[in-house]
Structure formats: C-alpha cells, structure tokens
Length: 158
Image 1 (cartoon, helix red, strand yellow):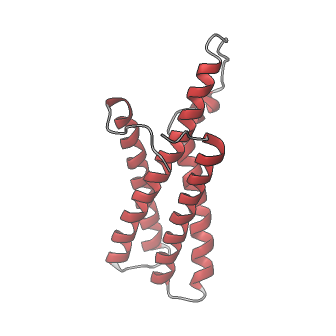
Image 2: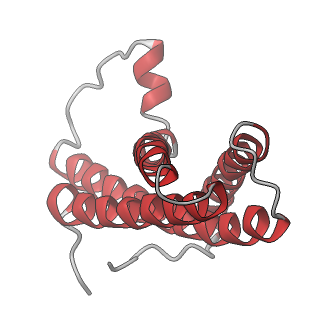
C-alpha cells in the first residue's frame, strides 16, 4: 500500500489532521456505545484497543483518500478544457475530499463491528467480544482500503 502523498507538507497536513480527528471522534462514539449499551467497564479495553483502531482507521482513510485523489488528478489532466457542470448541494458535500473515505470506512466498520460483536457475544463475555469485534472490523477496513486502492485508484507504485 504505497502512500505517494507527503502528508507532512502544508497542503495535506490539514486534511490529515481532519481525517485523524474524525477517526478519533468516531472511536469516542464507539467507546460511549461500548460502555453504556454493551456494559463494558474495563478501562484498559475501552482505552487501549480504540487507540490502535483509531490509527488503523486513519491509515485506511488516508489510503482511500490517496486513491480518490489520484483518480481526480487523472480526470483533471484528461479533461482540462471542458466546462464544469453544476452539482446539487448533496453532491457538493459528498465531493468534499474527506467525506467519501470517511463514509466508506465508517459504514464498513459499523456493519462488521456490530455483526461480529453480536455473533461472538453468544460464545464469549462482552469484553472479549468487544476486543475481537474491534480487531476484526479494523482488519476488514484495512482490506477494503487495499482493495479500493488496487481496483479503483490503480495507484502507481514508485
């Protein structure tokens, strides 16, 4: 999974910080659900596991953002002199650079997390179910980001 955008440059540092903040807020919501709805009270499980998952989701969103950015650069080079078309407000919101990667990652994470949590909950206690469900969902998000990068973005390896 190559990352050919230098994320420390001034152009992309703000986007990287927005992606990281959104992933952190999302994990804070998952922690809230875990503590109050699922009844998980172990502070180590509720703090340490989501930190690692936040970093994994951030990496996934960077990979997906990079692949979308590369496709947009290719489109811009091919169609430099065409008229721009008018978009509705919903499309303008969806075409904001960080929305699409976050929507993809968050919907996949929520679906896999809830499905695996409730399946594993029948066999193990809530703490182990939470740990395994978070890890499975983060791993699936990494696989989906890699799939999007290879199939949609067709990122050139340098």
